Length: 482
Image (cartoon, rainbow, N blue to C red; front, side, top):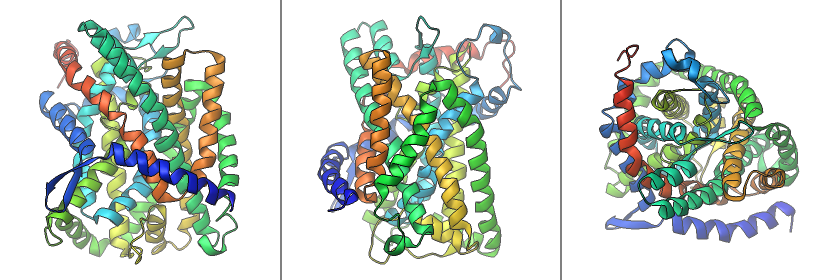
């Protein structure tokens, strides 16, 4: 048995077991089941959107101004943190604008049909409010150690927020649960899925699964990626933010330009494509089960793509240089819009406009489907896509390594041994991810990732009134303009 086959065979039962727990489904009608975790995420997105008075619409412009430096505050000279608000946004975007936008959209379409994309966008819009709350809490409850480094995120607002409400034991338990899930999520969704799809695209451009010399050498490619990731993550958040600040704009511009080329080439059929996506999103021709299936895949892949409700982005936004927690919250919500509304829609239009057919065997397709779609207009593009995919995955992996590291140091302390030990394990999982099949990776990474939402969403409900009070005070500032 080859190394890749051995790794895949051993990961499959673990993947299936974890997926069955996290995505435990309840029947909603005959033959139709919906995972409870998706109800959990939809409910918090709806709650935050209405509770904060559609902050995602009313303060998007202000968030852009703060991120770009056009909007300032009198107390900005009192701001503390390690990276700028824009760097925090770029770093979190490097974690979200990744293969969830390229491969994730393709997966949603291959399983739930083109209509799933509409539900991804709806969740992206609603998720902006959730990310506003998460980031604001991250800044409010962040801590500073003796060396001057900041730490924050759900671990801290669970622990300290619940302690303020005379529930310290419950807060500590849920903080520990989140930290454990965050480490697992970093190893799965932020690591294994990313490297897996980069490897798959390299196979696509080097002869396919039958001819490519890389087809059964995932472990070797994984070692190469582990080295490249390790070089950056050793430098910590400032090194990661510096790389993300340069890589994210480059990869996003390259991908969007290529997407617009395909869209323009099929300009005449754009109305039909939009109609196809919209009709599929609300169609019951395939039965209620088909409609719900599209919704489930849209919600699932949206949450995977933009992290709203998962809590991970708050870890990075917590170290931003800011005086007002809600100001950084307004910056944070831009990530969900760029990620799920803009980039995902471009990918969806490219796939639908191209007219490429899904795998006739019914197999789940990710990056391969997107690659074929671009190839219909630019036969050479799969090679360029391989480079773009590498940038997407690389930036996502280095950011998620930081999320997992912060969770590890929360649980075990910030010693050098813990730091290096975690980074070594993270690199090992890169090798495992490159060697596994997509269906195994999807189940494993999604299960690890979505588990983070269980304790995080509880904290969001409980602590939302604190941020609402801060938002009310913020709007009373003389320099505030709606």
